Image: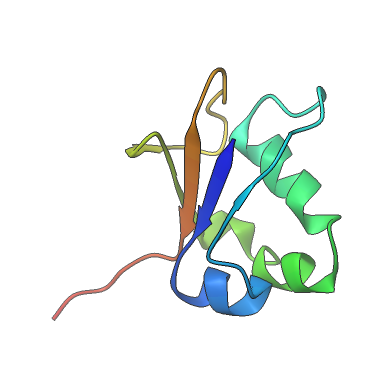
Length: 83
């Protein structure tokens, strides 16, 4: 599965994109975020305020309770403000 990180999520993790194999215990976006937080201090820091991070599965916006299923790509990004 390909994970994409944008804006300050990318800056804090130090990673723009990566391919990962998820543990069998990860079935939802919330579980994925919890797992990511265990991958090191940079990920724990990036996802510290996970409630404000937006997520897209295969380019469709989803809530954190969404099931990952057979997703090919999951993107994480902070909320965007316009002007």
